[in-house]
Image 1 (cartoon, rainbow, N blue to C red):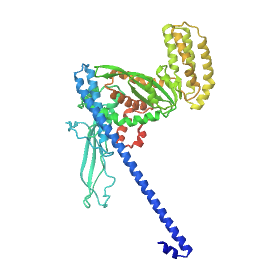
Image 2 (cartoon, one colour):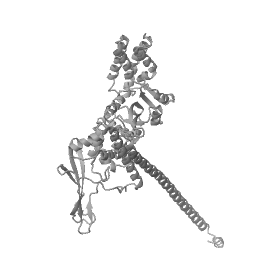
Image 3 (cartoon, rainbow, N blue to C red):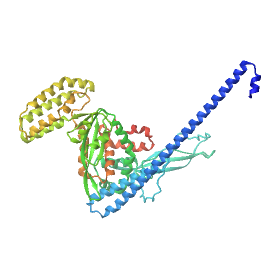
Image 4 (cartoon, rainbow, N blue to C red):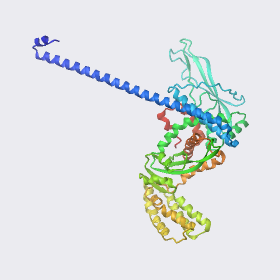
Length: 525
Protein backbone atom coordinates (compact mmCIF):
# COMPACT_ATOMS: atom_id res chain seq x y z
CA UNK A 1 0.00 0.00 0.00
CA UNK A 2 1.42 3.39 -1.06
CA UNK A 3 1.68 6.56 1.08
CA UNK A 4 -1.40 8.24 -0.50
CA UNK A 5 -3.59 5.26 0.31
CA UNK A 6 -2.32 5.26 3.90
CA UNK A 7 -3.03 9.01 4.27
CA UNK A 8 -6.58 8.43 3.05
CA UNK A 9 -7.33 6.02 5.92
CA UNK A 10 -8.71 7.87 8.93
CA UNK A 11 -9.94 4.89 11.03
CA UNK A 12 -7.35 4.32 13.79
CA UNK A 13 -8.28 0.62 14.26
CA UNK A 14 -7.77 -0.05 10.57
CA UNK A 15 -4.37 1.56 10.73
CA UNK A 16 -3.45 -0.52 13.76
CA UNK A 17 -4.56 -3.68 12.00
CA UNK A 18 -2.44 -2.81 8.99
CA UNK A 19 0.58 -2.16 11.22
CA UNK A 20 0.12 -5.48 13.02
CA UNK A 21 -0.16 -7.26 9.68
CA UNK A 22 3.10 -5.69 8.52
CA UNK A 23 4.81 -6.62 11.80
CA UNK A 24 3.61 -10.25 11.48
CA UNK A 25 4.81 -10.37 7.88
CA UNK A 26 8.26 -9.09 8.87
CA UNK A 27 8.45 -11.56 11.78
CA UNK A 28 7.47 -14.43 9.46
CA UNK A 29 10.18 -13.45 6.98
CA UNK A 30 12.75 -13.21 9.77
CA UNK A 31 11.78 -16.64 11.12
CA UNK A 32 11.93 -18.12 7.63
CA UNK A 33 15.33 -16.54 7.08
CA UNK A 34 16.62 -17.90 10.42
CA UNK A 35 15.29 -21.37 9.52
CA UNK A 36 17.07 -21.31 6.16
CA UNK A 37 20.29 -20.12 7.81
CA UNK A 38 20.04 -22.96 10.36
CA UNK A 39 19.48 -25.48 7.56
CA UNK A 40 22.49 -24.10 5.68
CA UNK A 41 24.63 -24.30 8.85
CA UNK A 42 23.46 -27.87 9.46
CA UNK A 43 24.19 -28.82 5.88
CA UNK A 44 27.67 -27.25 6.12
CA UNK A 45 28.32 -29.15 9.36
CA UNK A 46 27.25 -32.43 7.74
CA UNK A 47 29.46 -31.75 4.74
CA UNK A 48 32.40 -30.93 7.03
CA UNK A 49 31.80 -34.08 9.05
CA UNK A 50 31.54 -36.15 5.88
CA UNK A 51 34.79 -34.65 4.58
CA UNK A 52 36.54 -35.44 7.87
CA UNK A 53 35.21 -39.00 7.75
CA UNK A 54 36.34 -39.42 4.14
CA UNK A 55 39.78 -38.01 4.97
CA UNK A 56 40.10 -40.33 7.98
CA UNK A 57 38.96 -43.37 6.00
CA UNK A 58 41.32 -42.56 3.13
CA UNK A 59 44.23 -42.20 5.54
CA UNK A 60 43.25 -45.40 7.37
CA UNK A 61 42.84 -47.33 4.11
CA UNK A 62 46.25 -46.11 2.92
CA UNK A 63 47.81 -47.10 6.24
CA UNK A 64 46.20 -50.56 6.24
CA UNK A 65 47.12 -51.15 2.59
CA UNK A 66 50.72 -50.22 3.35
CA UNK A 67 50.75 -52.43 6.47
CA UNK A 68 49.37 -55.43 4.56
CA UNK A 69 52.00 -54.97 1.87
CA UNK A 70 54.70 -54.66 4.54
CA UNK A 71 53.56 -57.85 6.27
CA UNK A 72 53.44 -59.76 3.00
CA UNK A 73 57.01 -58.62 2.21
CA UNK A 74 58.07 -59.66 5.70
CA UNK A 75 56.25 -62.97 5.30
CA UNK A 76 58.10 -63.84 2.11
CA UNK A 77 61.43 -62.29 3.08
CA UNK A 78 61.51 -64.23 6.34
CA UNK A 79 61.66 -67.49 4.42
CA UNK A 80 65.40 -66.92 4.05
CA UNK A 81 65.88 -66.37 7.79
CA UNK A 82 67.33 -69.15 9.91
CA UNK A 83 64.56 -70.20 12.25
CA UNK A 84 63.76 -73.23 14.28
CA UNK A 85 60.85 -75.20 12.71
CA UNK A 86 58.66 -74.35 15.70
CA UNK A 87 59.51 -70.67 15.30
CA UNK A 88 58.73 -70.88 11.59
CA UNK A 89 55.30 -72.43 12.26
CA UNK A 90 54.38 -69.80 14.82
CA UNK A 91 55.67 -66.95 12.66
CA UNK A 92 53.70 -68.14 9.62
CA UNK A 93 50.54 -68.52 11.71
CA UNK A 94 51.00 -65.06 13.26
CA UNK A 95 51.54 -63.44 9.87
CA UNK A 96 48.44 -65.13 8.43
CA UNK A 97 46.35 -63.98 11.40
CA UNK A 98 47.68 -60.40 11.21
CA UNK A 99 47.06 -60.11 7.47
CA UNK A 100 43.54 -61.58 7.76
CA UNK A 101 42.66 -59.12 10.53
CA UNK A 102 43.98 -56.14 8.54
CA UNK A 103 42.16 -57.26 5.38
CA UNK A 104 38.90 -57.59 7.33
CA UNK A 105 39.35 -54.09 8.78
CA UNK A 106 40.18 -52.72 5.34
CA UNK A 107 37.05 -54.36 3.93
CA UNK A 108 34.93 -52.72 6.63
CA UNK A 109 36.34 -49.27 5.80
CA UNK A 110 35.82 -49.63 2.06
CA UNK A 111 32.16 -50.64 2.37
CA UNK A 112 29.32 -48.43 3.65
CA UNK A 113 27.97 -49.37 7.09
CA UNK A 114 25.54 -52.24 6.86
CA UNK A 115 26.31 -52.99 3.21
CA UNK A 116 29.61 -54.82 3.57
CA UNK A 117 29.99 -57.46 0.89
CA UNK A 118 32.52 -60.28 0.76
CA UNK A 119 35.78 -59.25 -0.84
CA UNK A 120 36.37 -60.44 -4.37
CA UNK A 121 38.96 -63.07 -3.65
CA UNK A 122 40.01 -66.24 -5.33
CA UNK A 123 37.32 -68.84 -4.69
CA UNK A 124 38.64 -71.30 -2.08
CA UNK A 125 38.87 -74.96 -2.96
CA UNK A 126 36.56 -76.03 -0.15
CA UNK A 127 36.28 -79.72 0.59
CA UNK A 128 32.72 -80.97 1.09
CA UNK A 129 31.81 -81.49 4.70
CA UNK A 130 31.95 -85.20 5.61
CA UNK A 131 28.59 -86.86 4.89
CA UNK A 132 28.92 -89.13 7.92
CA UNK A 133 28.80 -86.20 10.35
CA UNK A 134 25.40 -85.80 12.02
CA UNK A 135 23.29 -82.87 10.85
CA UNK A 136 21.43 -80.64 13.27
CA UNK A 137 18.85 -78.93 11.11
CA UNK A 138 17.09 -75.70 12.03
CA UNK A 139 14.20 -74.60 9.81
CA UNK A 140 13.49 -70.87 9.83
CA UNK A 141 9.84 -70.62 8.85
CA UNK A 142 8.23 -67.22 8.21
CA UNK A 143 6.11 -65.87 11.05
CA UNK A 144 2.91 -66.36 8.99
CA UNK A 145 1.82 -68.81 6.29
CA UNK A 146 -0.25 -66.09 4.61
CA UNK A 147 0.98 -63.33 2.34
CA UNK A 148 1.43 -60.07 4.24
CA UNK A 149 0.59 -58.11 1.06
CA UNK A 150 -2.77 -59.64 0.09
CA UNK A 151 -3.52 -62.31 2.70
CA UNK A 152 -3.46 -65.29 0.33
CA UNK A 153 -1.84 -68.59 1.32
CA UNK A 154 1.90 -68.95 0.68
CA UNK A 155 3.25 -71.79 -1.47
CA UNK A 156 6.75 -73.20 -0.91
CA UNK A 157 8.87 -72.72 -4.04
CA UNK A 158 12.31 -73.67 -2.73
CA UNK A 159 14.71 -73.07 0.09
CA UNK A 160 18.10 -71.61 0.82
CA UNK A 161 20.37 -74.06 2.64
CA UNK A 162 23.75 -73.30 4.21
CA UNK A 163 25.96 -75.83 5.96
CA UNK A 164 28.61 -74.74 8.46
CA UNK A 165 30.95 -76.95 10.38
CA UNK A 166 30.32 -76.67 14.12
CA UNK A 167 31.73 -78.47 17.12
CA UNK A 168 31.00 -79.34 20.67
CA UNK A 169 34.14 -80.23 22.64
CA UNK A 170 35.44 -83.46 21.06
CA UNK A 171 32.30 -83.89 18.92
CA UNK A 172 32.05 -82.52 15.41
CA UNK A 173 28.78 -82.06 13.58
CA UNK A 174 27.40 -80.00 10.70
CA UNK A 175 24.98 -77.23 11.57
CA UNK A 176 22.46 -77.08 8.73
CA UNK A 177 20.55 -73.81 8.47
CA UNK A 178 17.48 -74.09 6.20
CA UNK A 179 15.55 -71.03 5.06
CA UNK A 180 12.40 -72.14 3.19
CA UNK A 181 11.24 -69.79 0.46
CA UNK A 182 7.52 -69.26 -0.13
CA UNK A 183 5.68 -67.43 -2.87
CA UNK A 184 2.19 -66.01 -3.22
CA UNK A 185 0.67 -67.14 -6.52
CA UNK A 186 -1.83 -64.27 -6.41
CA UNK A 187 0.58 -61.33 -6.22
CA UNK A 188 3.89 -63.14 -6.90
CA UNK A 189 5.37 -62.08 -3.53
CA UNK A 190 8.30 -64.20 -2.24
CA UNK A 191 8.67 -64.62 1.53
CA UNK A 192 11.65 -66.12 3.39
CA UNK A 193 13.48 -65.52 6.65
CA UNK A 194 16.68 -63.53 6.00
CA UNK A 195 20.05 -65.23 6.35
CA UNK A 196 21.67 -63.99 9.55
CA UNK A 197 25.12 -62.33 9.19
CA UNK A 198 28.14 -64.19 10.55
CA UNK A 199 31.55 -63.35 11.94
CA UNK A 200 33.36 -64.81 8.90
CA UNK A 201 31.97 -64.08 5.46
CA UNK A 202 31.70 -67.20 3.30
CA UNK A 203 33.35 -69.25 6.03
CA UNK A 204 32.57 -72.86 6.82
CA UNK A 205 33.09 -72.42 10.57
CA UNK A 206 30.10 -71.93 12.85
CA UNK A 207 30.47 -69.87 16.06
CA UNK A 208 30.98 -73.01 18.19
CA UNK A 209 33.99 -74.12 16.16
CA UNK A 210 35.50 -70.62 16.14
CA UNK A 211 35.07 -70.44 19.92
CA UNK A 212 36.71 -73.86 20.27
CA UNK A 213 39.80 -72.78 18.32
CA UNK A 214 40.18 -69.57 20.32
CA UNK A 215 39.57 -71.16 23.73
CA UNK A 216 42.00 -74.00 23.03
CA UNK A 217 44.68 -71.54 21.89
CA UNK A 218 44.35 -68.87 24.58
CA UNK A 219 42.79 -70.70 27.54
CA UNK A 220 44.02 -74.29 27.08
CA UNK A 221 47.40 -73.18 25.61
CA UNK A 222 47.07 -75.50 22.62
CA UNK A 223 49.01 -74.20 19.58
CA UNK A 224 47.26 -74.22 16.23
CA UNK A 225 49.45 -76.96 14.78
CA UNK A 226 48.31 -79.28 17.58
CA UNK A 227 44.68 -78.36 16.96
CA UNK A 228 45.22 -79.13 13.28
CA UNK A 229 46.42 -82.61 14.23
CA UNK A 230 43.44 -83.16 16.55
CA UNK A 231 40.99 -82.16 13.82
CA UNK A 232 42.73 -84.47 11.36
CA UNK A 233 42.23 -87.41 13.73
CA UNK A 234 38.47 -86.74 13.44
CA UNK A 235 38.65 -86.64 9.64
CA UNK A 236 38.45 -82.81 9.45
CA UNK A 237 41.20 -81.30 7.31
CA UNK A 238 41.68 -77.67 8.37
CA UNK A 239 45.15 -76.21 7.87
CA UNK A 240 46.82 -74.15 10.58
CA UNK A 241 46.96 -71.16 8.21
CA UNK A 242 43.17 -71.23 7.98
CA UNK A 243 42.94 -71.53 11.76
CA UNK A 244 45.31 -68.57 12.09
CA UNK A 245 43.20 -66.46 9.72
CA UNK A 246 40.09 -67.27 11.75
CA UNK A 247 41.91 -66.24 14.91
CA UNK A 248 43.04 -62.94 13.40
CA UNK A 249 39.56 -61.93 12.28
CA UNK A 250 37.99 -63.01 15.59
CA UNK A 251 40.53 -60.89 17.46
CA UNK A 252 39.53 -57.89 15.33
CA UNK A 253 35.80 -58.47 15.83
CA UNK A 254 36.21 -58.86 19.61
CA UNK A 255 38.23 -55.65 20.01
CA UNK A 256 35.13 -53.47 20.71
CA UNK A 257 34.33 -55.76 23.66
CA UNK A 258 37.87 -55.37 24.99
CA UNK A 259 37.64 -51.58 24.61
CA UNK A 260 34.34 -51.59 26.54
CA UNK A 261 35.89 -53.84 29.20
CA UNK A 262 38.79 -51.42 29.64
CA UNK A 263 36.41 -48.45 29.98
CA UNK A 264 34.48 -50.27 32.72
CA UNK A 265 37.73 -51.25 34.45
CA UNK A 266 38.86 -47.62 34.61
CA UNK A 267 35.58 -46.69 36.30
CA UNK A 268 36.50 -48.85 39.31
CA UNK A 269 38.01 -47.04 42.33
CA UNK A 270 40.36 -49.88 43.37
CA UNK A 271 42.57 -51.92 41.04
CA UNK A 272 45.23 -54.63 41.21
CA UNK A 273 48.23 -54.40 38.85
CA UNK A 274 51.11 -56.73 37.99
CA UNK A 275 53.21 -57.67 34.98
CA UNK A 276 54.82 -60.77 33.49
CA UNK A 277 57.38 -61.27 30.71
CA UNK A 278 56.41 -62.68 27.32
CA UNK A 279 58.88 -63.57 24.57
CA UNK A 280 58.10 -62.07 21.16
CA UNK A 281 59.61 -63.30 17.93
CA UNK A 282 61.86 -60.85 16.09
CA UNK A 283 61.88 -62.24 12.52
CA UNK A 284 64.53 -59.82 11.29
CA UNK A 285 66.99 -61.10 13.88
CA UNK A 286 65.76 -64.69 13.79
CA UNK A 287 65.38 -64.76 17.58
CA UNK A 288 63.06 -63.60 20.34
CA UNK A 289 63.05 -60.50 22.52
CA UNK A 290 61.46 -59.91 25.92
CA UNK A 291 58.21 -57.97 26.10
CA UNK A 292 55.67 -57.68 28.93
CA UNK A 293 52.01 -58.19 29.65
CA UNK A 294 50.73 -55.69 32.20
CA UNK A 295 47.68 -57.09 34.01
CA UNK A 296 44.94 -55.09 35.75
CA UNK A 297 42.03 -56.42 37.81
CA UNK A 298 39.17 -54.75 39.60
CA UNK A 299 37.84 -55.70 43.01
CA UNK A 300 34.26 -56.41 44.00
CA UNK A 301 31.64 -58.99 43.04
CA UNK A 302 31.98 -58.50 39.24
CA UNK A 303 35.75 -58.55 38.66
CA UNK A 304 37.25 -57.32 35.40
CA UNK A 305 40.66 -58.46 34.11
CA UNK A 306 42.47 -56.62 31.30
CA UNK A 307 45.90 -57.45 29.88
CA UNK A 308 47.98 -54.82 28.08
CA UNK A 309 50.91 -55.90 25.91
CA UNK A 310 53.88 -53.51 26.08
CA UNK A 311 57.34 -53.62 24.47
CA UNK A 312 59.10 -53.12 27.83
CA UNK A 313 58.53 -53.04 31.59
CA UNK A 314 58.84 -49.25 31.81
CA UNK A 315 56.41 -47.51 34.12
CA UNK A 316 55.30 -45.20 31.30
CA UNK A 317 53.20 -48.05 29.90
CA UNK A 318 51.18 -48.33 33.12
CA UNK A 319 50.76 -44.54 33.11
CA UNK A 320 49.55 -44.62 29.50
CA UNK A 321 47.04 -47.39 30.25
CA UNK A 322 45.61 -45.74 33.36
CA UNK A 323 45.51 -42.25 31.82
CA UNK A 324 43.43 -39.90 33.98
CA UNK A 325 42.31 -42.68 36.34
CA UNK A 326 42.44 -41.82 40.06
CA UNK A 327 42.01 -44.45 42.73
CA UNK A 328 43.83 -46.98 44.88
CA UNK A 329 46.30 -49.26 43.08
CA UNK A 330 47.56 -52.52 44.61
CA UNK A 331 51.08 -53.28 43.30
CA UNK A 332 54.33 -54.94 44.28
CA UNK A 333 57.52 -52.98 44.98
CA UNK A 334 58.47 -52.53 41.30
CA UNK A 335 59.94 -49.05 40.80
CA UNK A 336 58.03 -48.53 37.53
CA UNK A 337 54.87 -47.68 39.43
CA UNK A 338 56.51 -45.09 41.69
CA UNK A 339 56.00 -42.20 39.27
CA UNK A 340 52.24 -42.81 39.36
CA UNK A 341 52.16 -42.28 43.11
CA UNK A 342 54.58 -39.34 43.07
CA UNK A 343 52.30 -37.42 40.70
CA UNK A 344 49.40 -37.68 43.15
CA UNK A 345 45.84 -38.80 42.50
CA UNK A 346 46.66 -42.51 42.81
CA UNK A 347 46.92 -44.14 46.24
CA UNK A 348 49.51 -46.87 46.67
CA UNK A 349 48.47 -50.15 48.27
CA UNK A 350 51.04 -52.81 49.17
CA UNK A 351 50.60 -56.57 49.22
CA UNK A 352 50.76 -58.41 52.55
CA UNK A 353 51.34 -61.68 50.67
CA UNK A 354 54.61 -60.23 49.30
CA UNK A 355 55.68 -59.16 52.79
CA UNK A 356 54.85 -62.62 54.13
CA UNK A 357 56.75 -64.28 51.27
CA UNK A 358 59.94 -62.46 52.28
CA UNK A 359 59.73 -63.88 55.80
CA UNK A 360 58.76 -67.32 54.46
CA UNK A 361 61.85 -67.44 52.21
CA UNK A 362 64.02 -66.36 55.14
CA UNK A 363 62.57 -69.06 57.38
CA UNK A 364 62.92 -71.73 54.68
CA UNK A 365 66.59 -70.81 54.27
CA UNK A 366 67.60 -70.58 57.94
CA UNK A 367 64.66 -71.49 60.23
CA UNK A 368 65.26 -68.17 61.98
CA UNK A 369 62.91 -67.72 64.99
CA UNK A 370 62.19 -64.08 64.10
CA UNK A 371 61.00 -65.15 60.66
CA UNK A 372 58.79 -67.80 62.25
CA UNK A 373 57.42 -65.21 64.67
CA UNK A 374 56.62 -62.87 61.76
CA UNK A 375 54.79 -65.65 59.92
CA UNK A 376 52.63 -66.34 62.98
CA UNK A 377 51.83 -62.63 63.35
CA UNK A 378 50.87 -62.21 59.68
CA UNK A 379 48.71 -65.35 59.93
CA UNK A 380 46.77 -63.54 62.69
CA UNK A 381 46.17 -60.63 60.29
CA UNK A 382 44.76 -62.96 57.62
CA UNK A 383 42.59 -64.76 60.20
CA UNK A 384 41.07 -61.45 61.31
CA UNK A 385 40.37 -60.30 57.75
CA UNK A 386 38.89 -63.68 56.77
CA UNK A 387 36.18 -63.21 59.41
CA UNK A 388 35.24 -59.87 57.78
CA UNK A 389 35.03 -61.23 54.22
CA UNK A 390 31.23 -61.37 54.02
CA UNK A 391 30.67 -57.81 55.31
CA UNK A 392 30.01 -54.84 53.04
CA UNK A 393 32.82 -52.33 52.53
CA UNK A 394 31.60 -49.85 55.14
CA UNK A 395 31.14 -52.49 57.86
CA UNK A 396 34.44 -54.16 56.96
CA UNK A 397 36.23 -50.82 57.21
CA UNK A 398 34.86 -50.20 60.70
CA UNK A 399 35.80 -53.69 61.88
CA UNK A 400 39.29 -53.34 60.43
CA UNK A 401 39.77 -50.14 62.40
CA UNK A 402 38.65 -51.99 65.53
CA UNK A 403 40.69 -55.18 65.17
CA UNK A 404 43.42 -54.70 62.55
CA UNK A 405 44.38 -51.19 63.76
CA UNK A 406 45.82 -52.47 67.05
CA UNK A 407 47.45 -55.40 65.27
CA UNK A 408 49.26 -52.97 62.90
CA UNK A 409 50.54 -50.92 65.82
CA UNK A 410 51.87 -54.04 67.55
CA UNK A 411 53.50 -55.42 64.39
CA UNK A 412 55.14 -52.07 63.60
CA UNK A 413 56.62 -51.97 67.10
CA UNK A 414 57.88 -55.54 66.61
CA UNK A 415 59.54 -54.59 63.31
CA UNK A 416 61.20 -51.53 64.83
CA UNK A 417 62.59 -53.53 67.75
CA UNK A 418 63.83 -56.59 65.83
CA UNK A 419 67.61 -57.07 66.09
CA UNK A 420 69.21 -59.01 63.20
CA UNK A 421 72.31 -59.02 61.04
CA UNK A 422 72.35 -56.44 58.29
CA UNK A 423 72.72 -58.86 55.37
CA UNK A 424 70.49 -61.70 56.58
CA UNK A 425 67.29 -62.77 54.88
CA UNK A 426 65.27 -61.80 57.95
CA UNK A 427 66.78 -58.32 57.94
CA UNK A 428 65.88 -57.89 54.29
CA UNK A 429 62.30 -59.02 55.01
CA UNK A 430 62.01 -56.57 57.91
CA UNK A 431 63.45 -53.72 55.83
CA UNK A 432 61.01 -54.53 53.02
CA UNK A 433 58.05 -54.32 55.41
CA UNK A 434 59.31 -51.06 56.94
CA UNK A 435 59.99 -49.53 53.51
CA UNK A 436 56.49 -50.40 52.37
CA UNK A 437 54.79 -49.74 55.70
CA UNK A 438 52.68 -46.73 54.74
CA UNK A 439 51.20 -48.66 51.78
CA UNK A 440 50.81 -51.87 53.82
CA UNK A 441 49.01 -50.05 56.66
CA UNK A 442 46.40 -48.56 54.31
CA UNK A 443 44.45 -51.82 54.47
CA UNK A 444 42.82 -50.38 57.59
CA UNK A 445 41.74 -47.12 55.93
CA UNK A 446 38.99 -48.51 53.67
CA UNK A 447 37.00 -51.71 53.69
CA UNK A 448 37.21 -51.85 49.89
CA UNK A 449 41.02 -52.06 49.89
CA UNK A 450 42.31 -55.63 49.24
CA UNK A 451 44.73 -57.19 51.69
CA UNK A 452 47.03 -58.59 49.00
CA UNK A 453 47.65 -58.84 45.26
CA UNK A 454 46.83 -62.54 44.97
CA UNK A 455 43.79 -62.07 42.65
CA UNK A 456 45.90 -60.54 39.86
CA UNK A 457 48.66 -63.11 40.37
CA UNK A 458 46.05 -65.83 39.92
CA UNK A 459 44.95 -64.17 36.67
CA UNK A 460 48.55 -64.08 35.41
CA UNK A 461 49.35 -67.68 36.38
CA UNK A 462 47.76 -69.24 33.24
CA UNK A 463 50.06 -67.10 31.10
CA UNK A 464 53.09 -68.59 32.82
CA UNK A 465 51.65 -72.05 32.10
CA UNK A 466 50.94 -71.12 28.49
CA UNK A 467 54.48 -69.93 27.87
CA UNK A 468 55.64 -73.53 28.14
CA UNK A 469 53.44 -74.43 25.17
CA UNK A 470 53.33 -71.45 22.84
CA UNK A 471 56.88 -70.37 23.79
CA UNK A 472 56.55 -66.84 22.36
CA UNK A 473 54.26 -64.47 20.47
CA UNK A 474 54.78 -64.49 16.70
CA UNK A 475 54.48 -60.69 16.25
CA UNK A 476 53.58 -57.53 18.11
CA UNK A 477 50.09 -57.59 16.59
CA UNK A 478 49.70 -61.23 17.64
CA UNK A 479 50.79 -60.33 21.18
CA UNK A 480 48.23 -57.49 21.38
CA UNK A 481 45.54 -59.80 20.00
CA UNK A 482 46.44 -62.46 22.57
CA UNK A 483 46.26 -59.87 25.36
CA UNK A 484 42.81 -58.76 24.19
CA UNK A 485 41.32 -62.25 23.88
CA UNK A 486 42.90 -63.42 27.16
CA UNK A 487 41.36 -60.36 28.86
CA UNK A 488 37.88 -61.56 27.91
CA UNK A 489 38.60 -65.17 28.85
CA UNK A 490 40.16 -64.20 32.22
CA UNK A 491 37.19 -61.97 33.01
CA UNK A 492 34.78 -64.79 32.18
CA UNK A 493 36.67 -67.17 34.48
CA UNK A 494 36.80 -64.60 37.28
CA UNK A 495 33.02 -64.25 37.07
CA UNK A 496 32.38 -68.00 37.04
CA UNK A 497 31.29 -68.02 33.38
CA UNK A 498 32.23 -70.97 31.16
CA UNK A 499 34.38 -69.38 28.39
CA UNK A 500 33.39 -71.68 25.50
CA UNK A 501 29.65 -71.26 26.01
CA UNK A 502 30.04 -67.50 26.47
CA UNK A 503 32.24 -67.01 23.40
CA UNK A 504 29.95 -69.16 21.23
CA UNK A 505 27.01 -66.98 22.23
CA UNK A 506 28.98 -63.78 21.61
CA UNK A 507 30.20 -64.83 18.16
CA UNK A 508 26.60 -65.71 17.27
CA UNK A 509 25.12 -62.39 18.43
CA UNK A 510 27.98 -60.00 17.70
CA UNK A 511 27.28 -59.44 13.95
CA UNK A 512 23.78 -58.11 14.75
CA UNK A 513 24.64 -56.23 17.96
CA UNK A 514 24.66 -52.43 17.74
CA UNK A 515 27.68 -50.52 19.05
CA UNK A 516 25.62 -49.01 21.85
CA UNK A 517 24.71 -52.53 23.07
CA UNK A 518 28.26 -53.97 23.06
CA UNK A 519 28.43 -53.95 26.86
CA UNK A 520 25.57 -56.48 26.97
CA UNK A 521 28.00 -59.06 25.51
CA UNK A 522 30.69 -58.66 28.19
CA UNK A 523 31.43 -61.74 30.36
CA UNK A 524 30.26 -60.17 33.62
CA UNK A 525 28.09 -62.02 36.13
